[in-house]
Image (cartoon, rainbow, N blue to C red):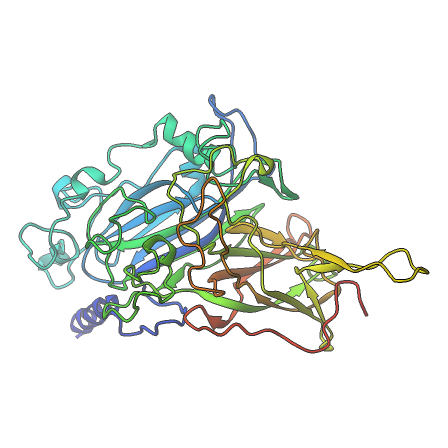
Length: 493
């Protein structure tokens, strides 16, 4: 009886790989065709080629899970904070499989997950596919693996050569340099060329603390491949799958404490719901044609904040991922690692509106253009008010921002934030590296926000709490709500 129930339960789990729970344009924790790790940090340890030490010991872990009993391939891409990729690799998943990755192991040791399908793993030693509870003695379950004898679980020919195989470290010195140097803003070869991101540290831009930063996308694909999502041929050719069956989680671990959340689950429309002109997650890479068929993320947000106080004396950080909506035809931005030497045509990313509320519904607008007040009183006519200087709080495509510090100034000790991160990608034709997608999707822009509350404490009393902010509107909608009324400026009363 118990065995019969177990078989029935596994059959029900197999059905989760479909779209039974799909609700497009609502980002929820369900199996999906694409997963997003919106922000990561990795502290670098010295090597013979790169003898640097990060200012903090920090690692990011993530897991990829297969919600289906059928085998699958997950395509993993690491991106810098300018949304240019550094490396990609594939992970073969047997049915109901899980693979956990330490990014420190990738960055500091050159190790990648070693997985294999049946062709390269005939003895089931590399990627075991589990036991069949109904089989004799609970023997191997071939239906959870690729198999030449099981047409429903076909082989993946691209995985014969495109999966990381052998023994770790898999990354050669040159590829290790790509991830270490590229994600610290020093260029893919530590030479300030072929840059994928900003030089930055905890205080802002211009220097480096040797903390690698970026984000990760994970796509369900039909076969192993070595294409990046921003390359022609990745979408619309049968490489990417529209079956929602991947799920996972992530954690940033530092000083014995961690924050984490589910990986952002981005569902696909197997029925072709999205049409050309619709906003999709990879829309900029398919020229707005919606051939990726992935739902977009949210565009306006609400979240709580605490400036350093007795309970959370470390204050509040926002981990913010944004879509520049820009696709460029070059692989890098030249000598763009130093902001003065050339940056992406969209840099810095602006916002539509960020409003801080206290608990008495007092509201002040932050992260916006503030006009310079007139000077030289006592003369007639008075001097004109000068144009405002933009205050840019979230300038790159992924980053950590401390609420209340620098340009992200807040007038209250605690309260909540309304964040409208929409913007219009303007004319970049005069840039040395223009966007081919100028004006795409109008004023709507997708984003993702994770809120982190920190208590520094001592070694035993430190506390971190992390959670996704509340989504108010989806980028599927043309709505661009603006809060109106008596809204002041930082420091007002």
